[in-house]
Image 1 (cartoon, rainbow, N blue to C red):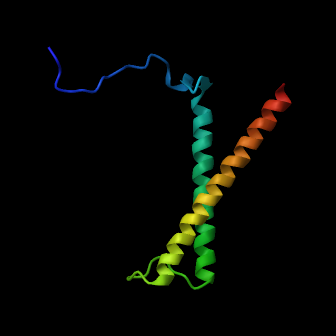
Image 2: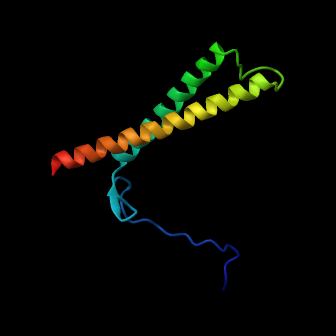
Length: 103
């Protein structure tokens, strides 16, 4: 008899701290470190861009969407995204350096 649900449920028999992702083992401490670094990079860049926008006279919290509000929102988004990419590249370079030093 066919089920009304077309999704298939699979169970993962590996423990949470020893998952295999893209044919390499990733532990939960590494994932936590990656997530916290991404969050810190995005939040830091967004705040820096927000205060830079405030110095330039842009505001992201006006009641109406004027040009200064839209440019302020774009500036915060760009600042967060760019700093997130910088944080990821720094983290990847540090991991490569650490791997090279341990060899």
